[in-house]
Length: 225
Image 1 (cartoon, helix red, strand yellow):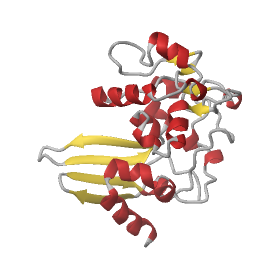
Image 2 (cartoon, one colour; image 1 turned 180 degrees about the vertical axis):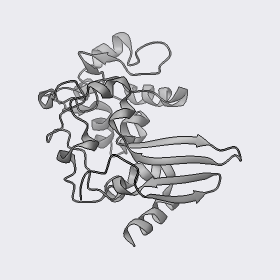
Image 3 (cartoon, one colour; image 1 turned 90 degrees about the vertical axis):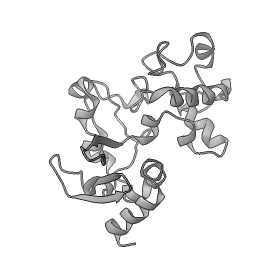
Image 4 (tube, helix red, strand yellow; image 1 turned 30 degrees about the vertical axis):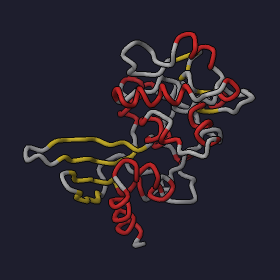
């Protein structure tokens, strides 16, 4: 399987009540996989695998008050041995300002990112703690973090039906930052090395976004299973 084409590709459409889900077949049937720590070059203007930042060089966008409260509660459960910037979080919080719309950036990356060499584990402190607690990282992390590289574009029709296009993130979705990114994992062959299709490897994330029933039907259409 290869990198999805840049242009329009075949769409699979599934109606679910007042929502019509439109799925990008090329990405969901590809073998994209996260290669953080295994060749990920990050999202900076220069390739920077050695920094181990992945897509965490910027603060995570928080989707509303409920999500801000979730992140705050998750932070309260973090212990210093698993959270490199625990002291900074205690001193100045984990959000960039009082709006709680983004996580803080500390030393060039998200405050939750444990850096290479940290004894408690490299990578997202929230993710590490969730796994240690035998819980899903979905229940601990900002939604943009666990959804990536899945992107959902929403559009409300005049008849009250909501269209939701589910696709892979593209460079343009990063806004101005995308113009300067040296590498974008969904557009580069290095990340298309998984042993399963995205519909299977990201099944938990897709189910959290669209619901189990829709994923079951989508898998049937994409794989015949």
